[in-house]
Image 1 (tube, rainbow, N blue to C red):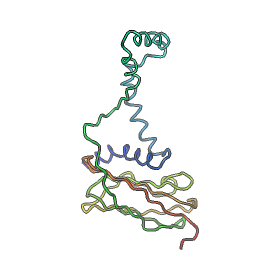
Image 2: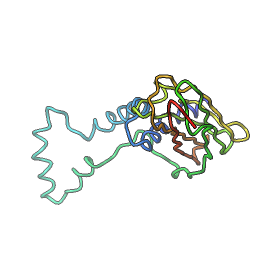
Image 3: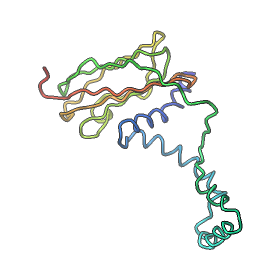
Image 4: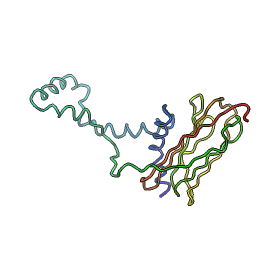
Length: 196
């Protein structure tokens, strides 16, 4: 069950990380784009006219508006099809209690992320560096993490010697296997040639 959930939850959690980091995240965009493209063609095929019939449909779309059916055209254009409707309520936000071992890291040395939350949660995290590159470039990424039976998760990585100086941010997220609870935390740290 753990493998099934980790695969199913990586894309939404990466989307959450991208949204919280305030920028477009390479991993998030690559994982969320197929979801949107796979659901859009199926739902739009019946409601959106093809390119060849577009101009001839435009006058008839305004005609029903004047004949008392203004909602038929806007409903199809404003509908937001979702490839996977959510049968459950939104998950409850819970604390992750995430910490970093060091407030300052010299390039080429190690950093450690520790999370203490609920047991057996799927965990992902990524590090956003000052030049907007992520953990794939300089270290500090995991899309398949898991808290243990006591609710602990730890990951240690080496910050690349090529990592730029400045403030980096670790974006961490976790979700329970049943999808009822999720947590998110952003943890900044400094990269400098000399740390106190």
